[in-house]
Image 1: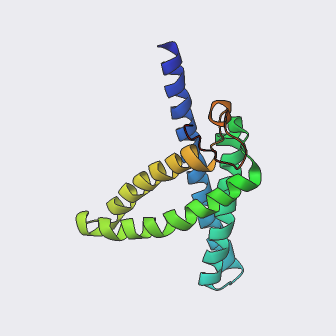
Image 2: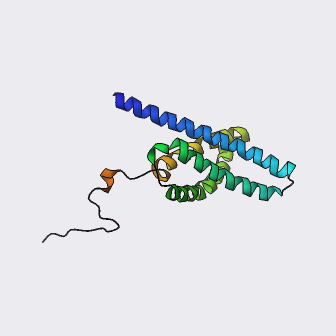
Length: 153
């Protein structure tokens, strides 16, 4: 029972940290947009592209070094998975937001619901795929890169 409680606390703590990082990176994105557009007079579309790129990298780096640091997941493999996951979740999130606008009448409530759903989705993808490393148990008995099928004699 004690192990189960410890596991749930660890998951809750990791999720809270993930959310705090996401919120901080969102704040960074808003500040970056302001600086690039209002102070440096950069084109809005270019500023958004630069901010999105920087935000994705910052989000990955903070989650890799803080949220999932105990996993010791390989940096480049995790970064590739993270970028690939965002290539899916960003368009999916846009589609989800569009669909929610038909169900929820106010855009701010739609935004809150969308953010909550996408936060959970992105957390699960990060936890179960992006920052996941194989356990020794999963690797036991498997030859590297070779699948062997035994046939009865």
